[in-house]
Image 1 (cartoon, helix red, strand yellow):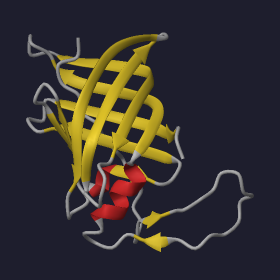
Image 2 (cartoon, rainbow, N blue to C red; image 1 turned 90 degrees about the vertical axis):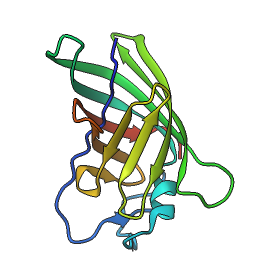
Image 3 (cartoon, rainbow, N blue to C red; image 1 turned 135 degrees about the vertical axis):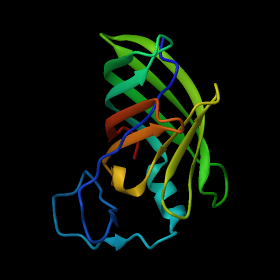
Length: 163
């Protein structure tokens, strides 16, 4: 059983991060991109909200103080927003291996003014991903999350399921 989960997001270095408003049904054309301003956490939360699916690796220290490595071929994350313009919400994670669900947990999440994403799981675990550790657009979400106590690191490679 996984006791701690961390998401780790890796990003490419770039001068600006952009929110993209793509419609996958339209042909690839150069589109106007809107830069994310520092502290523009509301647009970032709108972009994060939705259903995501992909794979993950999780490295953590177990109860015997040994590093463990887990790989999941199917991970599903859901980020929902409350009514209004809040930079936080509720979510859930389900991890599957060989078609069997092996882990499911709910969490709350928020994006702060530094664009750090924090997940707080129902069991009290807290994972964070700083702006330098994730890459997020309308279609993909690659992230590295570290636990508050640095005893777990999770890396997710996800694609948007819901528009």
